[in-house]
Length: 591
Image (cartoon, rainbow, N blue to C red; front, side, top):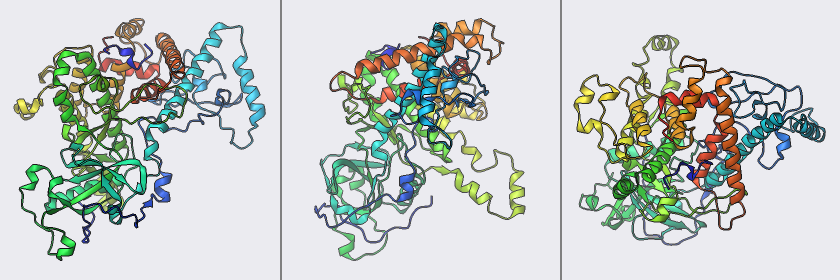
């Protein structure tokens, strides 16, 4: 289980609604919920994978090449230097390619003036050209494997995000269509308690009823503001989804014990028929399609003994959870949102349910509740970021600054970045992610243990060390230091943290990277082709082995895609030598 080859081939809110529904579910099916509107349908769920347009995964590999004479461009993670070359020739001097730069961008047969039949035969002819050259054939095969992995990553994306496409939207009138499937909460998180439920309108799906904590006016406003932030963004696999929210009266028995003893304070005097029974409490209720089984805080507590017994397995799991966190935060930043309240209690873990596979390569998957059993060790849970009550929306402030008087805009443009209200939160989430690394590894928050750290100009070396108990410990220690840089300018971006985690999980071995660096010395040019020859070969071999693994698993019964496989495909479908060289100095790959 410790092997790296597990998955590698080697406050503003909405106004309160005054008619409060009652929680006891009547089973009435007289209400009909509406589906998402056209605008939400057109906004497909984003995912950690790069959203660049890629050809249909159902078309032939022969169609992935442009006709001769068409200029081709490989868009990679770092958008490096553009290079062009003859179709089908493995350009070893190019750093823009994942494996072969000419195979990176598909040719759309729907383009005006294209001739699909002629182009198909021409592209096949190009692939088979220079057939007597083994190096030329190998370079083309490497490019085909790279394109196959991109297709596979898209298939995985569709497989895992299928439930987020065109979700049902529920309103207060749909409350009676739900019934609890368990009287015990599935999860008690920082801001809410969750119950699993079924909807009469959608009996094939499961939902969670999220009952937000605290009945104070400020708390309700915070909950509603956070929900408005959630709904302002396209859905993402690692962000909690809101299928509808409203105010409702819930029985005291469904509230946490510490809230039952608190006296209820209605927002305003209401008739008894509207207020509900005296034992009911008014709360913000949210319907979500994901049923969390525990928080990251629960996970850390339950797995403490396991961490000591099998540190390799545990810390590898932590790398995967942090990678999902980075994916979600990257999506937030793309839409101008800073969470500002990243803590273990606000990170939910959902066991991924078995679904019918849509593609041939499959891997084993069963649901897991995060316990320390064998099944929980084998299957990676899905991480969800929740509770946006403290979130900061930069986009709204930017919009205000561009719609005011020109003189005010001119004065605003002269302000230093650190003075701007949005700038001070630019790398807020990165700092909190660094603290989470300590807490996920059963270490205390260094700024709670030593409050004087923030009062002085500390250095990264002043942070407490993380015990080195596995081959991932040193890399996680270095990542925490980079994220906890006191100077936000020197603090790494969440995207760079994501690449470091990918390198720890699947990156080249340290000896291979050292060998590449020693060829031309530490001061060599990053874009020199000879340095990247070995890395290009490494990527070709890794992609070929990964495709072989998926091909072998495709014929095994009762197999399905796992979340770990999707994350692995994302890395190898977008990795290229420049990104490997750029990430290596910031991390420690010990395997």
